[in-house]
Length: 441
Image (cartoon, rainbow, N blue to C red):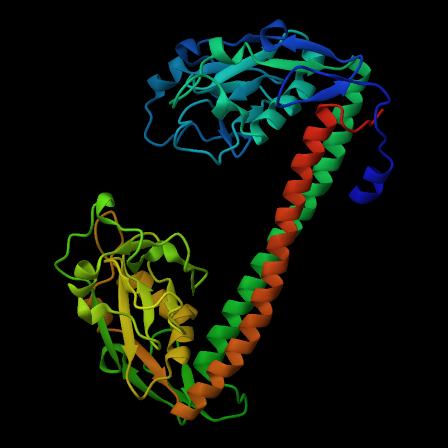
């Protein structure tokens, strides 16, 4: 439906150079302005807490926030907040040197208060509001704010932003552009949301297949017996159980304080961390490298094919990955990862899937301890019990799950690619429309 509408769009007959680098050519009758000619800065202090509708800017959207649980802020803190109105445009121009991914422009759709650390613009003519938002949003998507000012900047202020040169079509064209983009963007956003929801459904399906198979096997008609593993009422009658630590060699980097950033080298041994585990797969990109001297300090955690990595510290605790190959040669890990080597009774692929099942993840959630940063100790892991099918059956289960998970992962990857394409299309659509490259009147 979106593509069909786009095919009807024509180009303007006469164009001119706007003289604005990021915009380029525009329709010949569009006017060039400096931003301060069209907006004023909003500085309306929330004295005596006259307004309590707390708003925040997140991912380019201005949303309500619960004022009764404001991340530790005291009520008096909101006295200094800015009162904004429907149609105001909010810019987050802080932390420019570190954060290059955030969307920094939002449009207020209701009266409320927002931190005065943000710059709020109010269109002099409110009928320009939505078009100006789309135009500044396009500038934001082009990462234009990062190129303003001079040198490496912590942030920008209104005095600098107000000098931004922009273009303005007639009111009729503005209205048409806004109507068109509202309609098209809502359709694109709906398609993106549907793709994301579908991805979550497939992830849930994958998790259920893994949990069911590693705990029940492939034969649904086999006899069952009671199981001593918590949350597992029964297992196939011919299966055994064993304590995790009795069937694995578990180790991690101990007594080693880590590296300073300047100690990393360009040509050395790959140094994996929890960051390199994504969706329970290893990502051999964006790696740090260490010298041979550092690599040899902990020979017990030099990786081998057949090892399993388990995140034991931090927010990603419980994530895992298996070593099917070492594409970059000899490698090691930092202190956030435990290295697990199953003994001859265990197929490492079967155990890898068991580490992902809901039972093991429930155990991890209960056993992890530590104030602040979650931490899973080897002592706590002694309490973990695992199901133990015959070795041949483990291999059959692993083969089955490799095939099924690969199918689901391929579907998820295609949907992720679709999301990327839709987001790129939306960005292109906004830019080309608000700068007159596509005619919608």
